[in-house]
Image (cartoon, rainbow, N blue to C red; front, side):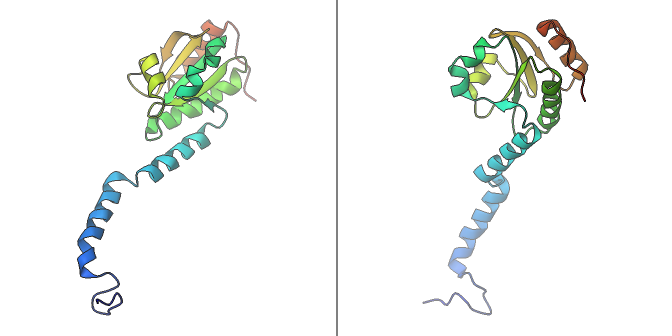
Length: 160
């Protein structure tokens, strides 16, 4: 029987070294898989905690279709521009309390992504009574304000 602790060969038997090399390469190539995605999702939740998250089940329930004005932001945890867009969306949510702001992860809410025909991210949709009134680039804050003023028919509350 091979000894695991040999001063010349280290702690790992030679027959296991190729397996560990392949395993280490897979971890490096695929970025840790589910753990990495979980960390990215937590980061996105930290960026915009004031904006609630919806998935396919929440959308299918129909509760959001009844909202007078709904701002729905499409994002992905791996998308760096989405980080900035969600920060702007959260700032807008504070200025527009009469409007409901919601975000959804395009990687997880595939039915919602298909229903809204999301072509690129970040993208924000303004819905009025369940129908898309506008699709905008959330990084263009001036256009975002203009669309909300037109759709909500009310001025934003000044930021404090």
